[in-house]
Amino acid sequence: MAKSALLVMDVQQDIVRRFADDTEYLTRLGRAVAAARAAGVPVVYVVVGFRAGHPEISPRNKAFSGIAGAVAAGQGRGFAEGDPGARIHSDLAPADGEVVVVKKRVSAFAGSDLDMVLRAQGVDSLVLAGIATSGVVLSTLRQAADLDFGLTVLEDGCLDADPEVHRVLTGKVFPRQADVVSVDEWAASLTA
Image (cartoon, rainbow, N blue to C red; front, side, top):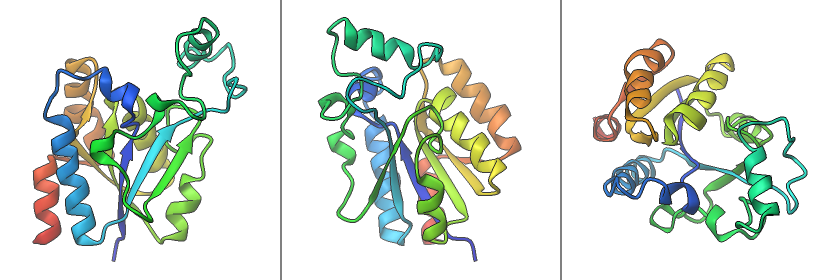
């Protein structure tokens, strides 16, 4: 029998703040977390985080080199240790005993011990949610598929700055490697 885990990815203060217009997102994702906990499905949080000074960020990395530059210009801490903006949003705070994995790149597996944590718990199927659909969700889905995990994506448990990109990914790209369902459909399947 498959053992699933819900991955809640990059739902950090400074990232959520960029999507303040979607006032229902945290509520929807909270329903998924509550359903997972009630069904005994492990909830694993994935966050991006760096050491002070950002030694992990190469100037050649387009996705992250701007963070180091902004920090050098005095614009925040850039998801480094102690950065309040790097904290998981308080509406979705991990419960005691829930694992928080720190990654160093876009995929939840890149520079983290996520694969080890999942394998140690006997997890072979992942339910993906987070910000952004075209970032952490896409990269994690691709890598997880290559690692032979069964996959489900919570379509309304993901957000992207570009709604059309979100629609194409969840409607056309992700279904090639994952089941794509709503938070409520997935939650209902846990009690069926």
